[in-house]
Image: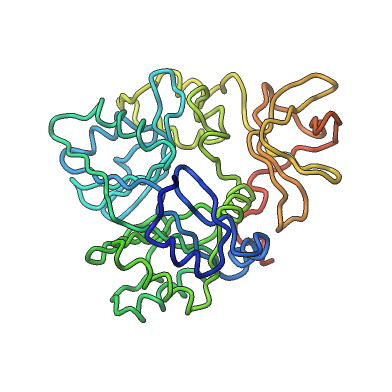
Length: 359
């Protein structure tokens, strides 16, 4: 039976279509997936992402995370965040995550729900004696996203008596307000905040956000938004069989410090500098049809890769996809959809650059 987040009753009250996702009962949509998608692009929408795993670290964290992660946390100052991969010894991606530096000896990780157990096992396997790991429980996580998201969330905070000025938070920063935590981060390509609050206060925050005109949105819109933004999904675009450079996130491999020893550095550095066995491209379908995960991509009649993530883009009105192919190319290709070859072409990623939807 699926677990319920602290906002389960609120979703029922908003007539959400609930589905199982990573073991949790979460909204797929509240009536109109496209309407929810466009609300985020044009104003603001919010997502219950309480299924995500929050892990707090305390102690001599910096040298450990510099070894454990592909990106370099030494770049962070207090109250700042970065995106990174955590890789195995062969360079395959165990998970992608956000790491926040709260103070010199306190960090917070937000990792994927489906990888919770293996992430915790990997962290504990490599944990030094001077680091404590604690999974944060009884907490809700709400992502408010869109061009108006920060302004409207700030108004909701004021309504609830929370003294915070979210508008002056920089991108990829974090703020602690008592037991509340706010990160100016997200997974839609839009501006916004991700807010962690004690479970008992989650419904009050949700209602306050609704009162500011923020549209509740489900998993369906979250997926189309992240794909338009060219953001990878673990389990489809990222996995343990491919390195970050083979999966479109080579930027998470920081090799600036030649003396930093991190897991699988040798292969990851080689792939970042010279490429790996394959690479990620973005394609757009030329005609009607929908690109989906697992479809075969062909070039001049020969299979060269697969679609890792595909969907219809509400913003562009076409079908888009991230593909993993064994060689780079420009121009046209074909995708096998239900035993038919349909024409497509390579395009730049992100498919919808930040702000383009409102130009």
